[in-house]
Image 1 (cartoon, rainbow, N blue to C red):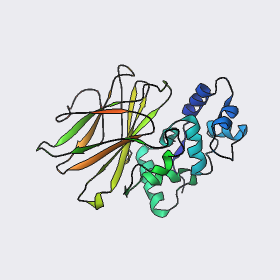
Image 2: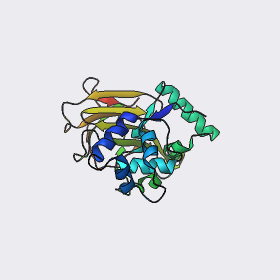
Image 3: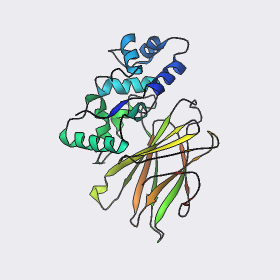
Image 4: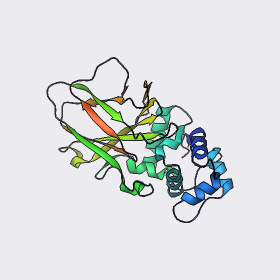
Length: 250
């Protein structure tokens, strides 16, 4: 099944130029590639120009590791994002997902272990950085506001993704459900929900915490945020405001 997703060539080129400024793309990739089967210069240029995708999820994850970016950050929709979400779900159900995107399945559905440990092993961190918190209903139903601060060591062209998941201890065996992620890149804050919904705003500065609103329902729930780079979270008490600068999960 053809998935309306492609490599984000602008982001790949920007990262390669930034990282390999003095060595050249092929040399840098070769020096930082994990294990054997190092791609040659022609293959790297084809990936960077969007002519083809890595043939397997393992090669794709290794390439993301070289660029030090979350694997979701190098994918872009080539059609309506809601159509992309529906197509991905259909591919999961029919077991017809493109081999490069096989890693996406580890984030999908309700799972006992989240985030997927297998993916982090390709990266310098070797494990996900996670922050957990619990929502206990207090009679007020609405959106809670979180303030996220990304890794200050990342450069302006270096996107940081923070994934969101929740679980109910009394339902579905307490399994986790990944429901989207937030991307911090320079001053921009972008939200992507698994149903295809998006949201975005621009902060006054890179150091300004990102305001993210997520739905707090009438039942207790556990939340977990995960990233491949360090981050901090502050939970703002009370119900989130309806106006102001923020991104909101539907």
